[in-house]
Length: 139
Image (cartoon, rainbow, N blue to C red; front, top):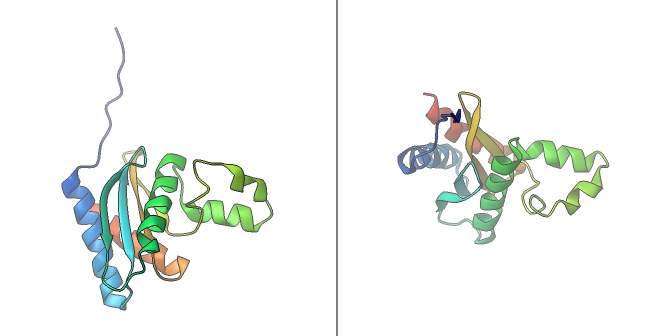
């Protein structure tokens, strides 16, 4: 008999809740950003590009979210790794487009179920917005 693993998964409703909470944080600060929520494989579930955010923000937020989901870690870790001299990591094709701070995995019951990525302001502000979105999941 096979022992299959049961694990939580993101629904569209939960992904929307996360993205709206992130958008509220951005609006409170007057920041126009793009917010992406992806599933555990990095596939898009929700994309919000706020009025006034440059179109490239949508692309970057999606790549940050994707990198956080498939790497199962915050993208700031990748950025720090590269800034500290491990530039060979830039050759990792699956991650190389989302290696800036602002991508955060969504972990539920020890399982990475997806990620949120934000782009449009300073990287630490992107991460602040992403964390606010993530906090809505556990509120």
